[in-house]
Image (cartoon, rainbow, N blue to C red; front, top):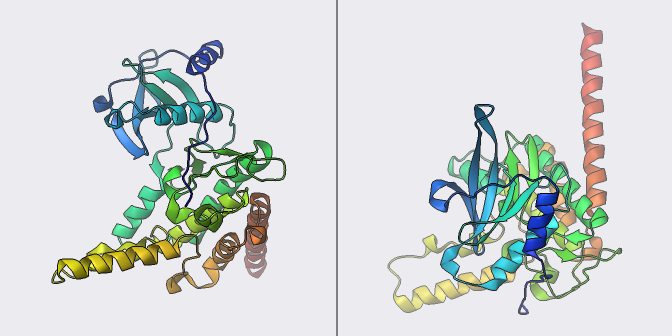
Length: 343
């Protein structure tokens, strides 16, 4: 894959701080990292839970999430630039399925901190917990709820804001309650789109390799359809309970009796299989090939077409899922009416 340099526009943190002041965002102090619960981490950053207590009301207010640069990485300007850019973009986004911007401030040591609405748990953590408990695939209704909320956010990004998310994966999807609300987060590597859906900076796409579309892995035209490939893989994750293609890197299956040379050879072959699988459609587990999961499997197949031109847009998938909901509601109403008539 070609060398990548994160696309970053110059972002003036002082201006962002001034804008927050003008908009009435109240000043506050970010506590030291050890005094906050760590929610997660990303490339060069950690995310913490900021509990907020109101002495005036004598109760806790809704918590916020604070994204801070990991001090262990040293003074690397790339991560600060990425956080600057994320704050700048997130501040412009207003959608019920996108995590809300709260503030962009500085820690006592001068480290920038992006303060956001808290999204409770990531879908990746929920998938992992379900897999450990051996609960099997998620209910079809929960998967369709994630599919609907997520594609609604993508349609907004692609058509209204002309932005490619650039790193869709289960870790960047936050779930509130029992799938009550689904929120998309992490906008540090977005790519601007033109009005035809093509990337303005075509060579700049980050992604996370096991979720990435073939054109991102092997080179090709980057467009809004590049987000739709990992969107399909996220639905597959909720069916399989595994990250895409990671089964190819199961080092635990290596036999301890193997000598060092043979073990290295098997590791090499394993990594070769993994690299070959990147950008391809994983097989659907046999356990979910049934009527209740059929609508989800159809969306997964459509979104993971190798040719981007054959993939549906976010708008098309959104329309399709809404039609599914409408048919389901009509079916329930008809069944209810039939029951009443029989009574």
